[in-house]
Image (tube, rainbow, N blue to C red; front, side, top):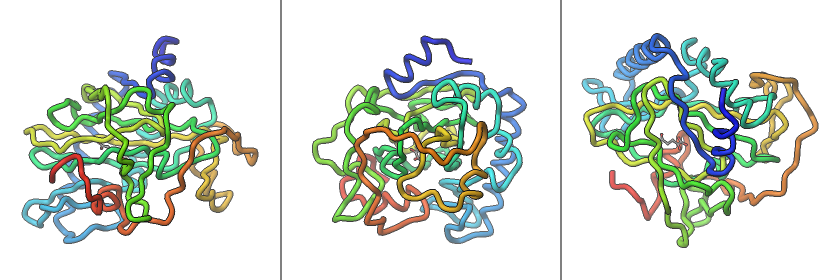
Length: 284
Ligand SMILES: O=C(O)CCC(=O)C(=O)O
């Protein structure tokens, strides 16, 4: 559980970290299963519904950038998104009713792991209110050297930046007035978690270190926050409820929104969507 001070820090700054949320055994299970999935990627030459591949990928040297929706592919990930230690923390920050609207494992492997350009998750999935956050479960120690998640403190209270280029959504900030200030690198030991608010500006550099930085990202949404891009079928929507009861009465908040339309030139993952960006922060 979080102290009142930690809860206030999160609301003030739009991010936080918590150490020792998972046990050593839970981390080892995640590492082993993830290693196995990377080896199985050798069978593929292109992205699939599950694998997003690094540009240097080959059968001899499988290089995975992301596992998409890993909870649908192995129980160890499913158990982790439902982990009471995580959900108890999330409940303190967004309330007792919790839905998930997405999950992914960003690999950021040693020596070449790809960067993620500055963006706000809110630009991908605006809702009726912003009691929404992403938890990053550190499968490895996350350090500045291996491509830690970088955040701009307090930016969750600021504007929603333009994430469009040439009139199409590109998943990265394109506003010429944007300069990341007071950037904080979230350094967390394996088994700990990072948390960032849905409107917090964040990104991460390439991993040129010799240590992997695998971050299992879970998106958690207050049950009464409804996606502005559409909720789909009622039963499907509520299948993603992890705690609390379904509600058809969304809570509305007066917030700055830019819809992710017209849609991206390239889809499939944030890496592909951002690949068209002309002014990149990080070289590839
Ligand atoms: O893996 C990272 O460092 C950033 C992840 C992220 O922001 C995303 O995938 O939306």
